[in-house]
Length: 623
Ligand code: ADP
Ligand code: MG
Image (cartoon, rainbow, N blue to C red):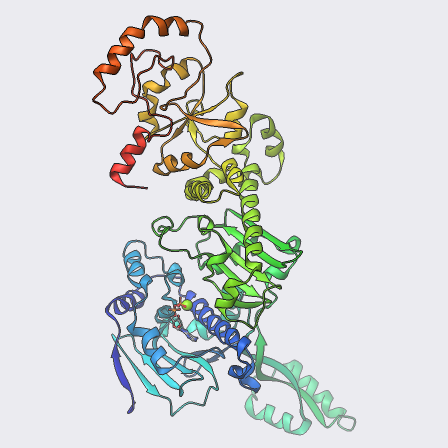
């Protein structure tokens, strides 16, 4: 094209495209899902802008927020068009080629090891999946602030952008034209497209239309029809038809002047039901629908089911509907970026209009692993994001979301037969879905346990609720995870405190002299072996009126021994000598104690001092 400006793809993007083009990945269908998802994002953006400025939508067809799919079998082109926000020339250059997103190299790296292209959307590079099925792609786009432009590329390392002086004006939005590869002709089949939209784009909140063929009955003049019929297919007539014709002739007099024939016409066929899942009655939504909805929200199309979900309506001063999900897996960087990013994974809608998926104010940091959506009727629509962020209702929404989230996690534990005490076990095992729930809480704990601990540290209001969700191993748990409630139920008569010990591993701790006597006396001691546990125990002082006692610290009381007094008396002098001998060391005190069994002496941390484990952590500065 004469007026085209040429650009090179950014190096990482170019590598990504090579991988996609040469991929043997069999599930090429995903390109359609990615394009529809982009169209939906673009529609969300223009709808959001229209809240404060109605003019942006324009009039007539332009104002219809929809997605259209059309195919041209002869030219082998698939068209996907939206009336979304569109892209300026600069957007086209940046978004589709020159600016690599942070996910690009991560995705390229991942492709080299696993090759599962299905996750492409999660990495923010879904657009390039078009090259799974096309060898030449045109993106025609019109943004309100610019003229219409065409982006095009044959994925040969370069792309071109030109002002569009050939195609019909789009009004506003984007049309993607895929010139399909020979081996991807199946995407010119209407049924295939309908099936894909149904499968992948069920939860898109804008109408998706397909320019679909339809057989209709048409009245045509009877004579014309007969002659043309004969001309076209004289030899294909069956004897039945001939007979019919003969009888037609007999009744020539009475015959009407017209005849009905089948004719193929085209019309826009709606492919999706745009009733949002969160507006439906939870009783009428199936598990499978929730699972699929989760996949579309998380752009995670592994077949795994979310671990739990909660779908509810909040009423009262602040009204909203929400669906929360516990994902089946934690993302790799969940804790790496914990202190730098506050990005929650909840989508915020106000009265069905998508507002943002980067709202920090909806959930506390420690619950950022949850996925889901909130749709509020109380929040105002026609204000900026910044204003919304300040809105007083957000506090109430947040509070309720935390409650519901913690309830959901508690239920996950309660319904897991592995979690219950033996007594309740029978009842639960009799319920039909217990097999499915078995081991789910351990899985949750493995993936997200650290989040619960961070919650105990950060959220004083819900500390007790969160403590209920804690799991750990103990001297008596036999390699299994146990809870504080279970620990308490096993406490010895007269035992006042909950005993725990901190260290790097259970194996190391099992050998600790601090445990000798406790084990002998049949006390249970909790093992805390995660570095974060040291911090956790600075915040978790008590649970259900029981104090926590670190057994390596001062203050351990195992009940009075009759010989205590006697012993203290007889070792008085030795004790004095010890104190003076250690005076130059960092030692506060020397005490006679009943905490040991076989080991003669041990260094104990003072009540408010750092445990030896904490010293070690501080030295290595790891959390
Ligand atoms: P993501 O959707 O995760 O941002 P994509 O690779 O799918 O990543 O798309 C890249 C970018 O291209 C989008 O962020 C958007 O800015 C732009 N884009 C893609 N498709 C459209 C479209 N139909 N309308 C407007 N912008 C689009
Ligand atoms: Mg996308």
